[in-house]
Amino acid sequence: MRVVTVVGARPQFIKAAVVSNALRDAGISEEIVHTGQHYDANMSAVFFDELDIPAPTHNLEVGSGSHAAQTGAMMMGLESFLGSHSRPDWVLVYGDTNSTIAAAIVASKMDLPVAHVEAGLRSFNLRMPEEINRIVTDRLSTLLFCPTQTAVDHLDREGMQHGIHLTGDVMLDATRTYSRRAAERVSLKSLTKLEKDTFYLGTIHRAENTDNPARLASILQAFSDLEAPIVLPLHPRTRSKLDLSSIGTSIQLIEPVSYLSMLTLISSSIKVLTDSGGLQKEAIWLGKPCVTLRDETEWTETLAGGWNQVTGADSDAILSAVKANPEGEAPQFGEAPEGSASSEIVQLLSG
Ligand code: UD1
Image (cartoon, rainbow, N blue to C red; front, side):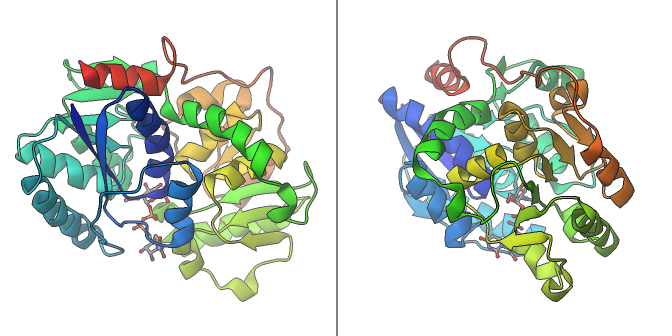
């Protein structure tokens, strides 16, 4: 059996790490194609090194561009790669990025079966590029690996009937596996001078926030008005939109961090304020309340007990959510029905 995995953006490296390891353990041959969507060392190479992901066999080096330019270049590169190599049994794709949709379209038009990790996620907001990528990729996939029952229900409501499996969430596997490694290898001191439990952790990278100056300004206003400092590892998209000289001193800007460093920052923070999908879940799994700087969340399981609060970009709403405390234990979600999500996925791929 041969699997071709297509990845390109930061969250996909993390998800692929645990599945790649499980494929290796099962003796299944995997070739990794990197589209080159993320290319800075701290957005890409550091993840391959730190998470023991096999080096990509092929890098399409597509880089940045408009959605059409970036996705089109990936599609041309992938068509040429898949056409010149022996037929894989599966083309494995992750999540909701332009790399995901490019691979799903090319593979399905070449009559190659697509398997989608993190299928069935919906924000019901079609202005998000990720939502378009999710819907198209799910529609074209033969195997749909759903992290939660909510995701299964979405596909069911869309009338999809075949190949849908509740596998659990590979990000939970990653959080569990790599938290131990982070505790051993990463010191908080190497990331910030601030002490444990004295700072908030923030991230902003969604187009809906970075490309809307009013939203971005309102989020930063809230960050400046917090009663404790906030550490903000800055995505290059966000950096390019900011006037760095106008940032208040309570906002501590740092470069994008590796996955182990991010796990260390989350577990050392008071709370997490983010527009990332993955970080919302990682916060809750690591027992930290989350404030989501978006108008909706795909991860509705995180909302139980007020552990995750969706505020949008309004600074007053953000500040009052930060003050509120969650009730009860942090919600549990994303568990595999048996074993782990990555082993379940490998078993399903093996047929
Ligand atoms: C992409 C995904 C998003 C995911 C995010 C994780 C899409 C549509 N979006 O968003 O779902 O949550 O990755 O980070 O696929 N850039 C660099 N260096 C890099 C990578 C990007 O400087 O290594 C800059 C470029 O200026 C680029 C911009 O960041 O134009 C945005 O990158 P892009 O890949 O278009 O989308 P992301 O915002 O990273």
